[in-house]
Amino acid sequence: MTQNQKLVIATRASRLALWQAEHVQASLRALYPDMQVELLKLSTRGDEILDRSLSKVGGKGLFVKELENALLDGRADLAVHSLKDVPVDLQAPFELSTIMARADCRDAFVSNDYASLADLPVGAIVGTSSLRREAQLRARFAHLRIEPLRGNLDTRLGKLDSGQYAAIILAVAGLERLGLGHRIRSRIPVEDSLPAAGQGALGIEIVQQRSDLLELLTPLACPVTTACALAERAVSRALGGSCQVPLAAYAQVAHHQLHIRALVASPDGLTIYRAETTGLIPDAVTLGRQVADRLLEQGAGKILSELSQPL
Image (cartoon, rainbow, N blue to C red):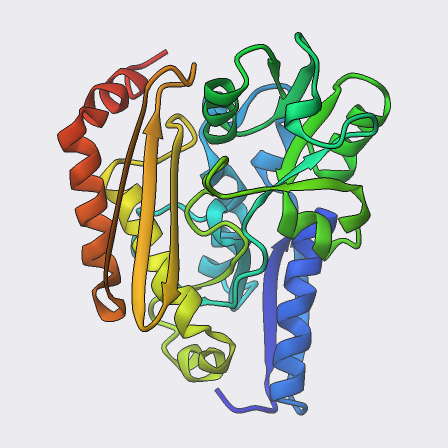
């Protein structure tokens, strides 16, 4: 592909997804001024089904399928996703070609009346769309009521503002990307709410035969974030991670070493298995698998098998 040709980016039509796609669009235009870079805006099943939790309607892959169809039929050259929405068992002919620099990966406490989780009174209703967040909340704050929360960011904030919830838990990165950082009352430490694999990072998906795109996209990749995300996604892949499983994985690079920690929890938060390890950055995937093995050795497999049973 030459730099004076056209690239089409498939994206969900939500405000946050458009910000992400426009961020990639601007980055590509800066790199290749002679190239046309356009957006193809699509609605996905994940955006349309708002009355049930993701874990009950097919998981985060619902946000990806329509974009993949556009890649297959040639309407788009690449798709931009929140990395945590990209299935870890991505199958041919698709490929996660590029992982971009991660933003703040922490969860955000958002409330109009309270400064932190610790300030919430007994019985206060907290909204979250994530079993991972829910399990960790229940483990630390058993006196709170955790209720489902679906919809895009504006919808979720609207539900909070209408009084349906005392507080809601969202991703810091999404709020800040949309200029809503002022809504964050506190950033929850990763020690208290371990993030989802890939949280805060953007991923670019292509079809494998489009090797012509790899060189163009290479400058967008962040080696450190890529290593961390590969380790985190290896944990999730080894454990069959999905929206049905309260699973978290978070890696950091420091002093030329990669440290990864992960957990598997029962949905009620009464049982949480934790594991961590440190090793060489090139061994990121192996380190992720090691952590997954340690979780299984502790007994996480029992939780995983129970949650994988048909409803």
